Length: 323
Image (cartoon, rainbow, N blue to C red; front, side, top):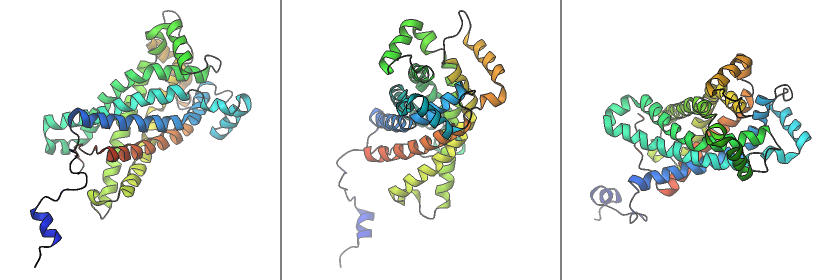
């Protein structure tokens, strides 16, 4: 006698509780992507500060910190106290807040831009190239924002008495060395590290997530939020491990070049070549174990938090090109 619920839903628009609120588009949508990226990167990188401190010490003082990650923690605590493990927390959280906004927001923006240019069908066929190109461009601009704060963090970690925190360390570098030499001497290495890292991070994540979703019997849009978060965590671990290995040599050089200012008149390129020659292949991969732990953990956390914040903000308007 009465039409079924399925018939009603098929033939009529049934408003939801949140139907009055229009889905965000344009700048509003990308601002939400950027905010979600900023928060996920600040939280994860900030939480991993102790691991990063030990990793950096292993890279900079291998003659002292040469017994692995766990022993490195004990050495730092014994020599300087537990508080030393949070050295550089301020510039880490602030730097990666900015970097995360540019990286995730930029990735979504450039991905959509490329899709609009070539069309969804062609984009789906060439999705790996789009993931790589979008992440590379986004990371370049993210590194412009990150580099000064990363230089400050490394100086605080490598020279514990250099300054009391982010503000004083930033001001001292600016006063004594200037913007270019003090904050951007490591821009080349940070690009060399971060751009391949981010390209690997996004393309491996997208590929791994696509494979995981394809193996499930339930379509993605019907999965529970907790299942989506679990998939993001699993794909993030795989992506983080790959990204850590690819970017490890540049990470070591970045730590070295920011440890102290270069000689008068010495170019960044010549310093990098000299350092790479002195370190050799083995030296360039110092601290890889701790870094895999750190990067795999924070990458998994980033994608999980990013997805959850996007969902909470209603920022679900990104274009999907995965098969």
